[in-house]
Image (cartoon, rainbow, N blue to C red; front, top):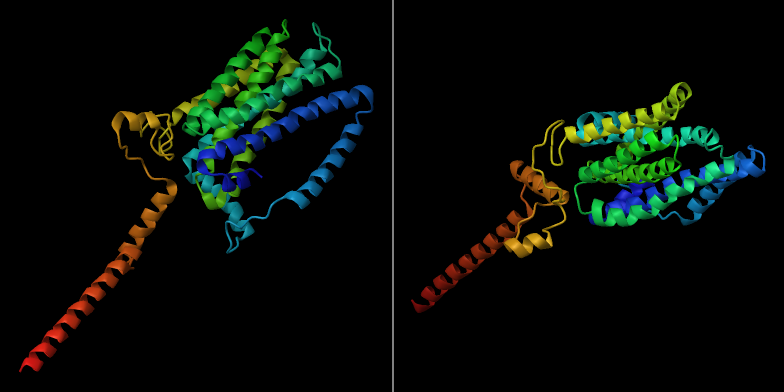
Length: 363
C-alpha cells in the first residue's frame, strides 16, 4: 500500500499522502490495544481472535471492491527470484536505504518495548489498574496520529527528509527520558512517553519513506521490503529485550535500554549528513531546505532570479541525452537542425536553378 502511495502522490505532497496512510496503520495498532482491553475485561480473551478474523475478511472485501486499478511500473515483467536478489543488492549499494533501515530498526524497537512493558507497570503498585484502563492508555497515542498529516504538510514536505528524521528522534528521546525516570511514581510519565513515542515514530517513518522512495522509482516495493524487514526485526528485538529487562530490573532498566536504542538511531542520523552522497560525512552543504521543489519565495525576493537544481527526472533526461550523443544517435534537436539544413539546401538549389533558367532565356 505505501509504495503505491509513493507512486501516485506528487513529490511535493508525497510525505503528506504517506502520513495519512501511516497514521491509519499506527492507529490500527493502538486501537487494537483498546479493543483487546475492553474485550478481555467483559468477555473471554479468545473473542479478540474471532474479532481479528472477521476484520481481516472485511478488509479483503473492501479492497476487492474499492482498490483502484493502476498501471504496472514494470510492464515487461520481473523474475521473482531475481527480484528478491535485487532487494539485497539495492540495500548494499544505497547509503540512504542503509541509514533508513538502521534508524527504523532502533526506532521501532522502542515502540514495542514501551507498549509491552507498560501493561506490567500499570498493573503493579502504585497503580494497580485493570485491563480496561490499561487498554485506554492507547487513546493517548491517537492524538499524535492527527498531528501527523499537518506536520508532514508543513515540515517534512518542505525540508530534507533526514532533518525531519532527526526531529522525530529528538521528540522520541525526550519523551522516553521523562517517562522512564518518573514513570515509577507519576502516571504523567507514561502519558508523556506514549504521546511522544508515537509522534516521533510516525515522523521518522514518514520522512524515511519519503527519502527511500526516491532511490528507485520502478523498484519502490523492493525498497519498501528492505525497510520493513528492518522495522519488523526492530519490533521483535524491542519486545524481547524490553520484557526480559523488565523482568530482571523493572521499568527503569527496560526504559534505559530504550534510551540507548533511540540514542543509537540519533548517532546514525548524524554520521551521514543531509546532502552526503557517500556512506559517512557531511559533504554537500548544511541546508535543510529541499532543492527539488523550485526556489523559495524568500530567496526570489532577496536575490531576484534564482537558478534551482533540476529534479531527478530532469537529471535522468540529461543523462539519456548525453548517452545518445556519445553513442552517435541523433537527438530531437539534431533532427530539427537537420531538417532546417535540408530546407536551406533545397532553397539554395531552387535559387541556383532559377538563375540558370533566367540566363538561358536572356541568351
